Length: 221
Image 1 (tube, rainbow, N blue to C red):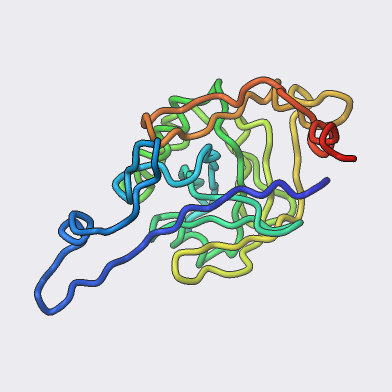
Image 2: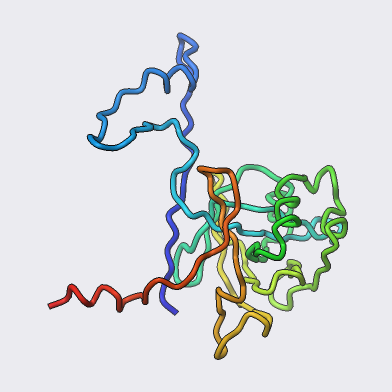
């Protein structure tokens, strides 16, 4: 399986100086050259890279309660590694305890539940997985739960978590037969959703419009 690389957005933290200039004031005074013939936004926009996969990270807490959060800033880091940009959450506390997590992908069938997992903290609602009507199965490979209602899951060990960047090693990928075609994961059956930051909405992955490492051959001489 060839690498599928997603571009990752990153936070830019601007420290306040002695004149108490804040980030908003600095953005108002930003200087950039406009691109002719296009609408120019500078840095005043929500969209950095798109589409952004709606990655669902599942962990156990210290009492073996399952927790799930949605992370939009995530992608494949290496052939067997995944990377997620995230601040402190209930999930990060759980990661420090278990050193493991599973990754699933929100899909068209689970939009409401997946969005709920992003809205509610496990610190305030420890049974939020059950409240969403979801169930879990303990991973046989890592110390983390697999969410039964998500048909695709990556079982991961924590490699590192520094400066808000989580890197995990995928030790196994499992998929429900319902999303397979010819023994391979079929995105047309999975119907994963992506986060559209420009309109603050979720969209499904669309139709096939070309073949990787093939469509461009018309320009190869």
